[in-house]
Image 1 (tube, rainbow, N blue to C red):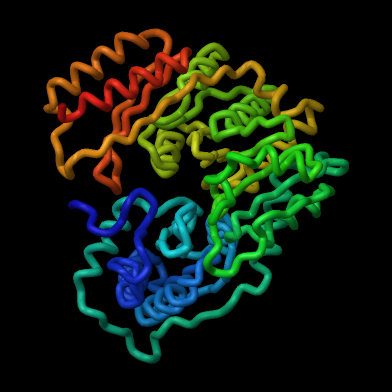
Image 2 (image 1 turned 90 degrees about the vertical axis):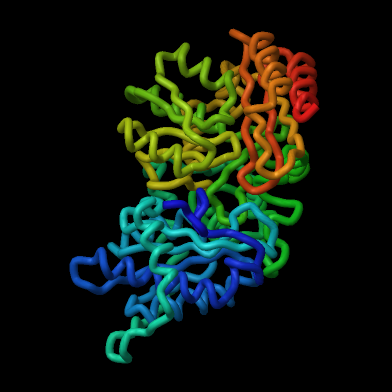
Length: 444
């Protein structure tokens, strides 16, 4: 069965246009409520709802709550809170599901709905398909006696703050550290500074005054070009940058270095290796070849999943491993959290710095990442690029040129009429030339 609404990370789109409209989200809530009750051994269900700071969250939260209530499903409201907090609280409170209203790193006029199971993990594919099937039914409320009730969880951020702090152990504190925290004017605007402060750090908070419209605007994990400069100017030893729903992490130091998901995952894996065996790590098609090469040198098996943290998680569960992530900053440490968590990941990195007495630059000094050059080449929607003989010949030439010293990745965009041509090599000029030449051959 083909998906009509659910993508790799829930339902997402432009607010006011299908499917991110109040009427559709009400139907979505009702459909999901029916599915949850069907799978509940008691025939009743309770769902927790959190959101980021987008102005549209007010509208969508009300619509979603109405949908669940009309299906006879109870609701626990958290207000603005990170996506991973919803995963944690759903599991900690033994609820049936968690829902996040967020479009992550996208601009404020986008929004989305994503679901977590009672185990704090992304909804199983089969449940999403069941919800899509339910959407074909007419809206039909249960009787008044069966309607779901709603309550607000007043201490949601406090509970999540304590959870985050617990992930590094009582023997570690951050006293004496001055940390720059970019909250992206998003869901972590209150909780992130509190977590680091309560662990003893001197916190310089940035982009922590959301107004409903400034989420991810020139700030956060997707705007880190000047993060190291801001870190230095604030007199901080390290910078932490989250995205709008705080499931991504990018870090920087005052020496001008910005550390992506591959580098931060490397620090966490090496930290765990110093205290036990790490059998394998999962990356994605976009993970740097230098990371893969270094894992192999250390005797750690490395496999790639499709782009998307849900696919990384699927591989980890399939193999019984604990660590994985994406270059973009989604990092999974399943010995601490069930999903990608920017604050928890940052704490694991900071704890490693504390344990070793080393800087981020020192902790990543033996990881040699290769230059990646990405060209987004426009193409007609539905174009058969695999059948383009000239293009495929150019791909083959590029692959031969980097054999043993890099790789070539061709990937169509899932949302735009673009073909992403990425070349990775130990020589940036070579990678740039090959990426441009290969992209230019498309449709020529």
